[in-house]
Every structure is written in structure tokens, then in C-alpha cells.
Amino acid sequence: MDMSQLFRHSLLLVSLCCCLSAKAATDIELQYLKDAYPATIQDVSSKAINWQDGSSMPVSGSNSFFSKISRFFRRNDAMEAGISIRDLQCDSYEPFFKKMYGGSLSSVRKNLVTVYWMPKVFGKRYPLLITTVNGVDKKIQRISAELEKLPPSYYKFLDHPGGSFYWRNVKNEKYLSAHSFGIAMDINSHYGSYWLWDREKSRNTGVKLAYHNNIPMKIVEIFEQEGFLWGGRWYFYDTMHFEYRPELFTHLPGIGLAYHNQLGQRCEV
Ligand SMILES: [Zn+2]
Image 1 (cartoon, rainbow, N blue to C red):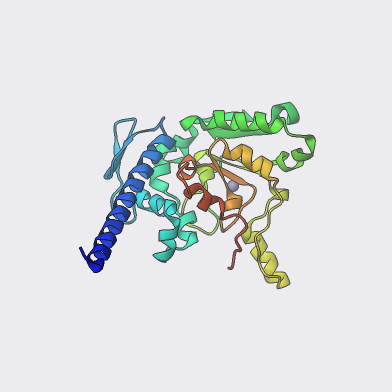
Image 2: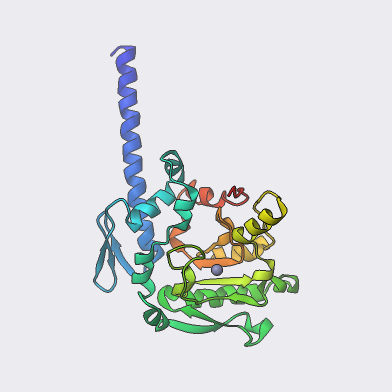
């Protein structure tokens, strides 16, 4: 084998390895979706999500929930393909959430319970409506109990929570907010930063819009430990907002990091 043959064989081997690793990553991602929601998803194949109730949802097709979530996981590929951060973060996966948590206001309501927010600190002042699906109510209770252990200097961020269940679309968008499914809550909006509010301010003052955040990372960490995504990590930031999205937390090397590296990005709109 001469040098050019060796080179061609090496190339072939490298491209084969790339294909295999891409395939393996896809299988791991599918598996991860199942692992993230064991109470509601029984099994995931390359063609469908099979739910615990015996029904299944196709995942093929370019606009499917799964293809979008795959793109999220492969953020760098997505960038090269020209998919914007907004595409990745603002896709609502509405059919998936409707199947999981309820397809209408009344069917979501059937799964809601009241969780008192930090009752040792605030008494019964703040009842939150949270879904029992996937044990999200229990997770909020654990988060609440952990936050109560923080020094009192943190309480101002957690007092007067902005709310939980609310059947509504995302502001200026055509899809339902995570608040509609009882899986989201806002902490004190007084200390929150929201890109749309900042855009208003920047229009009035001429000051360039830039990411900023006042919420202590200790609070964020407590939510993230229970699989809640923080709106402060979005490019279009909403730093008072948390929603239960365990599928976006992964232990795959480099992927969790890509998600976390969004913090501090500028929002040029
Ligand atoms: Zn919110």
C-alpha cells in the first residue's frame, strides 16, 4: 500500500467512524428522552415515541418534535446548517407537551395540585398550581424545601413569585407557554430580566440591548438539580422563569456544556 492508498484508507476509516459516532449519538439521544420521562414514556424507537398508555407518536419528518430536539443536542451542527438559536429555543414541542400533560385547559387542570411555596418562610401565602404528571409537584416541593435552607438574603428573589399555571401563549408567539402545562414557575419578577422588557428600554434610551441577570446562581443550581431549565440560559433571556425540561439536561460529554455556555450571550435584536 503506497502513501496515497494509505491516506485514502485513513480517510475512509475516519468518515466511517464519524458516521458510526453520529448514529450512536442519535441512539443515545433517543434513549435519553425515554430516561428523562420514565413515568410517561415507555419506549422510543427511531420511528415513534411509545407512551405508557399504549399510544404512540411518530417522530420521523423534518418538523417532528424529535428532529427539533436532536438539533438542540447537536448545537454545532445546527449552527452550520443555519438553524438559529431562536429556532432551537423557541420551538414549543406543543404536541409532545399536550400528550404528556393534557391537550386542553380542562385536561391539564385535572392533573394540577396546590404546592405551597417555601411555607416555612412565607407560610401559606403562595399556593402554586403544579402538575402531578412526571412528579413535577414533588420536584417543586423539594426545590422549595432546599431554597428554605438558604440564608435569608436570598429570600427577596423568591418572595412574591410571579406565578405558575396559566393557560396562555408565549408573548407575541402562536404557541403555548410551558406555564400552560403546570410545569413552569416564575420567581420574583422584580428581580427578573426579560429580553422584551429590555428591548423596550433600549428603544427608549438608545442603550444597546445586552444580556444581564440579577438572580443568584445558587438559586438556579437548586432548580437545575431537579431538571428545571432556567430562562436565564436562553439567548432570549427570561431570568425569573423555570420550567421542567429534563430532556435538555444530559450527561453526554460536551453537550450539557454547550447548553450552559449560552449564559452571557448577547441578545442582538
Ligand atoms: Zn415564566
